[in-house]
Amino acid sequence: MFLFIQYKMIVAIITLILVVSFVWTFSFFIFKALLKPSKIAPYVWSFKRHLDLMKKLEIKKWAKILDLGCGDGKALRFFSQQFNIKSCHGYDLNFYAIIYWKILNLIYWHKNIKIKQWNFLKVDLNWYDYIYVYLRASQLADIEDWLRKNKNKDTIIISNSFEFAKHKEFDSIKNFKDKKSIFLYK
Image (tube, rainbow, N blue to C red; front, side, top):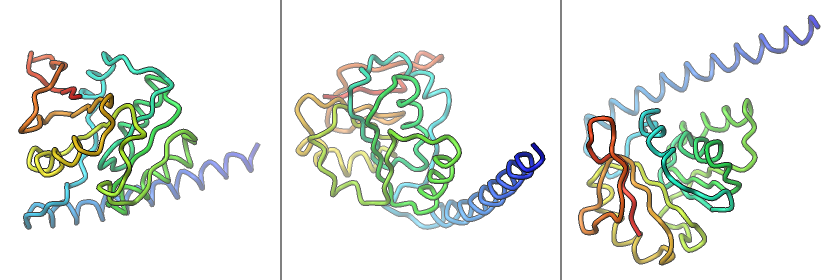
């Protein structure tokens, strides 16, 4: 019993150290990104209020979902837990967000979520039933034509907070202020 308590204490201390170092490094990159215009999206986690809105979606557990610019995989964890989805994949270039996800995965052991540090523009989109994006409007404009050209015709794109410039959503979910917040595209 005593050894088990010591083990938990050591794991907690190591986790705390990793989280603090992650936050410190993350803060540096956020300030750097704010000072210099960039095509790379800053790491912004999915907010609980947006995830709560997505509970209204009807996603089958056999579905395959892809998160483009997944960060620490919070949205993928939500889809996995809320809809019991067995195949969740994410791609991001942010090394520190990927490391943070790996730490979370060690703690919570999400076997059905795979996240890779990779340029998502090189990913084959045809395999996925749903593609989730939480990118700024300017970044959505940059990938809009690429997404349309490379996705399966039946794939549904779930865009959190930002609309595509050229295409009209087929459905949307409104927030508590009656403003469209989650956009669905085919």
